Image (cartoon, rainbow, N blue to C red; front, side, top):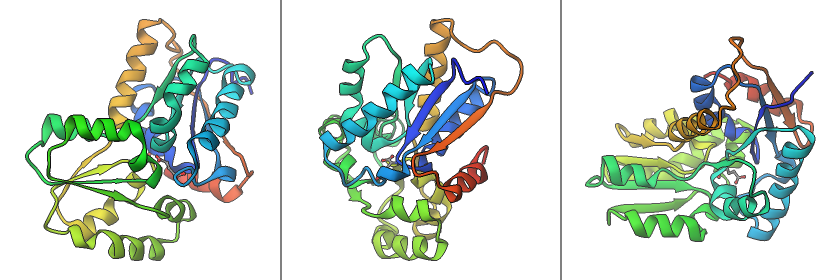
Length: 252
Ligand code: DGL
């Protein structure tokens, strides 16, 4: 299969599909290579150096082996920790990165109490802390959801629900905004709603998709084909289960 001139997209696992699905709504005719790095999952508990080395290998492969025209980092942990360093390493290439949608709260629902859910790595990162200081509404709880992305990867519904009950029930009635600061979490949005009730979710993926479209438009590098693009999936541990789960959530 010719996968030249595609858009590369990666995450520590299948969570980045929530970003790809938003991109597909705007750019259905592009070709995509999705790389699920389950061999190195989770990124959330790794050091910056470890994450950089892992992501640098992926990015290098995508640009120079697969000839991708742009890369989307569909992982908030990798984005907040190493996106800038990766951009410095590949200054002439397009690297687009998701980030926790805390600025959206500032823009649209500043006065409402907010829960930010993200990995420990994201919550601790300098980039997120700068964002938090800049847009702080002084009614925000930061919750490092250690282990949640792993549970979502594994897909055991009962364990996911138990985890959420144990960790977020205490915010019921206290928050009205929820920032989904990890790309895995939109996959359990329904379950979060079941526990927290009627809350508004904030997710950076739709804006990232718009940004990517504008960028490709400006550079005249959109795929002009009228056919629906191809989507190629790789998993770094060759997991058949991950592949099945990825295609189950595609276009959902
Ligand atoms: N999906 C990743 C994110 O958005 C995190 C998962 C992990 O910890 O590996 O942060």
